[in-house]
Amino acid sequence: MDFLVSLLSNPSMLLGAFAFIGLVSQKKNGTEVLTGTFKTVIGFMVFSVGATTITGSLQNFNVLFQTGFNITGVVASPEAATALAQGAYGFVVSSTLILGFLMNLVFARITPLKNILFHGGHSLFFACVLALILKSYEFSDSMAIVIGGTLLGFCSAALPQLCQPFMRKITGGDDVAIGHFNMIGYAASGYIGNLFGKYKAQSTEDINFPKWLSFFRDFLMGVSTIMLILFYIATLAAGSEATGELSGSIHWLVYPLLQAFTFAAGMSILMTGVRMFLAELTAAFVSISEKFIPNSRPALDVPTIFPFAPTAVLVGFLSSYAAGLLAIVIMATFSFPVIIIPAAHICFFSGGTAGVFGNSTGGWRGAVAGSFFVGLLLAFLPAILYPLYADMGIEGSTFPNVDHNIIGILLDQFLNIFR
Image (cartoon, rainbow, N blue to C red; front, top):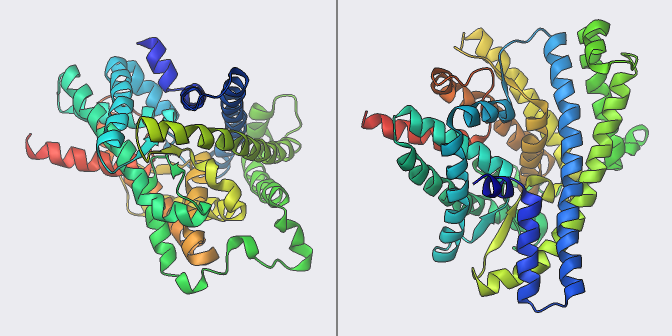
């Protein structure tokens, strides 16, 4: 059991296994099989190093920002909530994850929903959400696993389909799907972008910056500059003492400089890894699709599409984070039972992706509006299910993702009918 959970939670190994099967089935020689398999695994690990670097930098930003502006509440970051859920219902969560992956393959094989999701982390978060809701209604472990695993498998195959019309616009092909459980939000961002369809040609990637801002045309320069500004705002607000607790021996005013450039370096690493593993995986997946699950496609993590519109990623991040900050004001003003604090790393990956989707249909206006809407969903939806989690001892953090919450709310409402 531990071996399977570890394997399914590690997408680099899972993708490597699929690449190996695909290359062997194409009767490639041993060297080609090993080369393709290793490049897939290594490329995804390079990608993961970049993602981890970015996430660590943004989590430091979260601490500085919340301290500096004296914001208290529940941080919308799923990692801590997952740890608590696994501690309380580890067997149900792990079994739901395994059955969910198997049911994803079944649904892809027998239905028109041909997407195979490879984001083990997001699947684990979703397994936690489903397990918590089902156990809150006192289902037995076996029933919770069967129902939760089936739902997880179906959503893994079905939800990427919502995004595929926009993926074809973004990537120019139909070989890859998005596999990140904010897919209802991403599709919504694409449709919101359609409202600005007449401005579609005014893409974020074609923004004509004034001469003195022309360095923004270089994505890494733009990212570095924006993150420098954000980090120094948060650092100056937090002060030397709070920053010093994070920076250690590094001077507190040097720390934001290093963190901003660390973030930019992480972005560069991430994009290199995407290009490396995607080329190998796509070629290997063709054979698997033809032999085992006809017409299937891999549903991959969101940075897969970042190279297609990198400026839209930055626009989406800023817009969704602004929406999250506005949501804090609204929740405080109207005395919500819990205030959900947006996590910068969630807004970057989810809001940035929403920006790419909105940009594909409505140019930069679509990117701003679509990601702002997704930012509101990331803030307000978790507040609905948080009391249920808190009653089960899962407090202090929550699951922010749009699909987790929409499916979770619907499941909760449905089961409540029979209570």
